[in-house]
Image 1 (cartoon, rainbow, N blue to C red):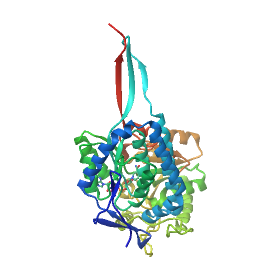
Image 2: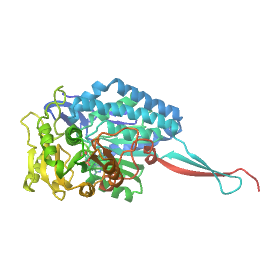
Image 3: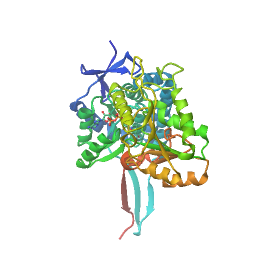
Image 4: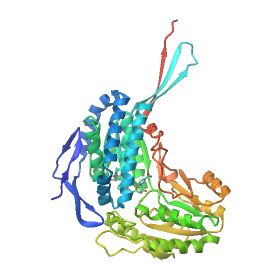
Length: 479
Ligand code: NAD
């Protein structure tokens, strides 16, 4: 029987009989392991462990915290092939994409090891004689981290690393269908010397474990990445509990292709943006907005490239796209494919493939308009709508006509188009001649409108969410 993994609370892996199987979406007979289905009581125990451990962690020197994160980074770098294979098996990313994600997790740990040392404040001259004013940043206490399935090691890393660098304790809940990579990451932090109770891992459902993390009165802040629907619930519950909330949610990211674009580059950018990682990226390009004058030539080339994508087992060297993550996600994708056809699109690809996993052919919805359901809702699969527009002004207006605002892009050789698009796009991240997905790890990540709420993640700005500001006055004079 596959190995069983319990929750990690107060420095102990707690075995339990209440487990669920984690299966490889490319080979359904491959069971990766059995993982705890935690309870509200497990969350309470994890929060208590965090509360007990946090003061000493906050009082440790910045160098002590940096050393743990730096050791964790080195352990991850050393194990990229092993962790990449585990990630590919549980989530379905190609091995090279999975190794890229693991490497990103290591880079994030290393970056925040540095940030632990750089965490500073400000000294400001007082308006009163003899007074001193210091503005300092302090940790919050116990923070709750809730993560999705599509980046099961990078997202836990980019939430845990700044939280720990700032001196917080953590209770983390990974997505139910991809716990293995997060378990591996927590084991690495343990091996790197993180004191017991500073990180606590509770696996299980959103409705039980996630809910309790959000509701627990001693969890001072919740950082969530996932769907807009759950994000909204967490924002409401956070307001009720008067706690800090950070939400990173979905996208319906536009990629504009202008007639002056380098056609081959535009095809490459759209193919990567729409179909890499099986389109299961919040920053995926799911609306390709193409200027009329280049539309037909572009679509012909793009569709040829789409049809040539080899869909297969992520661990096979010649696969170019892996499976959809789960049966539920595949069914949802197929419903959207049927919806696109019924809305009047010419659908290319998108069918379920006859293999022993959740495989789907990459899909283009041609002749789409921006008001269609398939152009407005996040599908989160290998499906992109192609929308024809007359000129730059219509392209920009169409790109911005969405309730999301995560990432956007334009392929153009015109400085005027590039500059105006960067200036007027209402997304949090804007790309020129680059895919909407695929970002650096040392700069802010996040969006606007329905895509994000609260402080930015990643880069130095990430410390904003995990700290609170104290303004300290003292008077050293005499009356
Ligand atoms: P999801 O919202 O279904 O689940 C996310 C996490 O929330 C999971 O751990 C889940 O168990 C938990 N959860 C569910 N209900 C909960 C509740 N009531 N209370 C507390 N927690 C609860 O999302 P998903 O399907 O895992 O991930 C896909 C979504 O994530 C997509 O919308 C995608 O765009 C988004 N995403 C966004 C970013 C970003 O940075 N903006 C990055 C990756 C993924």
